[in-house]
Amino acid sequence: MYQPSWLGAFVNPFYIARSGLSKNIEYFSKQLKGILLDVGCGSKPYEEFFEIKKYVGLDIDTKISRSKKKADFFYKGKKFPLKSACFDSVICSEVIEHVFDPDYFLKETNRVLKKNGRLLISAPFIWDEHEQPYDYARYSSFGLKHLLKKNNFTIISAKKIGTDVSTIFQLVNCYIYKIIEKYPRFLRLLIIFLIMSTFNILGLLLGKILPKNKDFYLGNIFLVKKK
Image 1 (cartoon, rainbow, N blue to C red):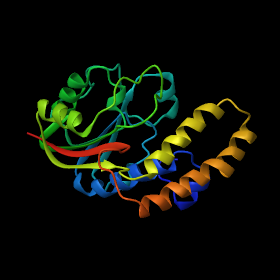
Image 2: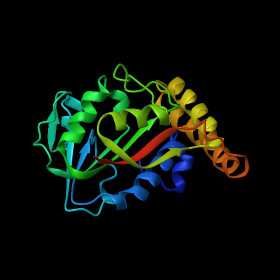
Image 3: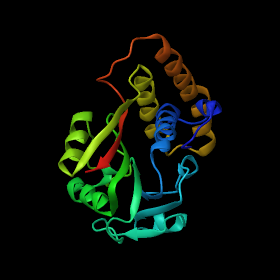
Image 4: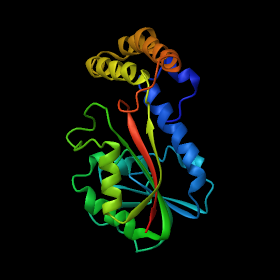
């Protein structure tokens, strides 16, 4: 689901978004070293990308997150239950849009990083509401850059994910998926395989041919350093 191969285009309604994000996290993973904290770790889907000393997961304290049995620490949504300056690196993927107070969240992220520690953070820009009711924001590249600088981070690299027509096809699949979500499983899978996979493939092909649009895209990924 999170690291789809090319076969995922036929069965994964979110293939375009997931593959784009996964490839970028893998690319930037080489920049993170030492002891790494995954904030909002979920099932730790990108752990294998990182060649580090230790991989530590922190997640919000809910029945769902505890049932995954992946997080090493849990928190209530405010202060991280961790000492200051104890991590060399942090990854925070598709989490900040679910945080009601991003300034506090980024201050806590900064606090647990060592001097010159690095943070890899991604966030959606064009995407539907998800994980309701805990979906609070969307960030443009300028908005995310402002938040990071405001909270004592220096930008090393910034990239927009999905700056081509494939974004439109991904949004069509998001639209369809929300409609068929409650359909019987067999019917849902049939629609995904026959219809949504077609949009995946069309989006990927046309994305290679048609001009890019850097102002219309799926999400941002930033590599930053603690000042």
